[in-house]
Image (tube, rainbow, N blue to C red; front, side):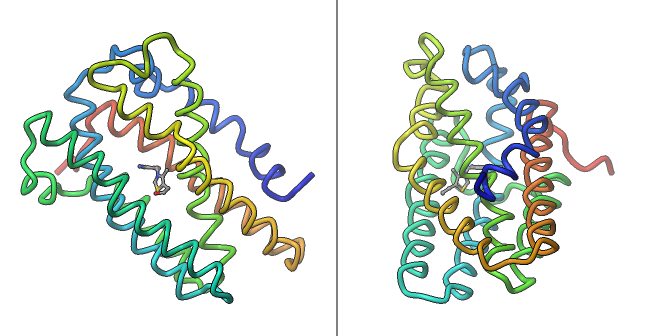
Length: 222
Ligand SMILES: Cc1ncc(C[n+]2csc(CCO)c2C)c(N)n1
């Protein structure tokens, strides 16, 4: 079993809860309240800004040009492709560019992005990848699952979302990160692997919490 197969297996019960979450299911069958989706889009936009900074740190921590180049490509894709989806949705849903950018990150968004940045700052590329891998990987898994549902890809509101996250482009980012982490894991001690697994599990939990936060449109209590 590869290292990423091992951590995917230990995160299975968390990922299953994300797959079954009413927000995710609602995107797939088209019943999600559009107000929850708008809330999600705005929070996710702020999240992706911080995610982009983590990816940029990947280029700094990379030990070879190929890896630097992979992170640079992923940075470009996040800022100019994935975030374009959000900008287009915002326009269509009547959210101005200013309002999108002025979104105040809620507690889960802030905790999640701060945790990724903190793991990246520990200075090892393996920790950084363990902290971001569930993002790319779980969205691709969810995208592929939802794309199988009748009508999901053609849905007036959520079809574009399902199309983007089930696309080969997104799949290949996840696969690239999986390969990198498996390569790096070969040089790690068992204690280091346990640390990486814990980082991966925490991000998996935050992914679940992000769906839940969006579904409940949760912001600061005071
Ligand atoms: C909370 C949250 N988690 C994951 C993603 C998806 N995602 C983030 S970065 C990336 C890979 C390349 O850009 C993917 C697929 C998201 N949008 N929001």
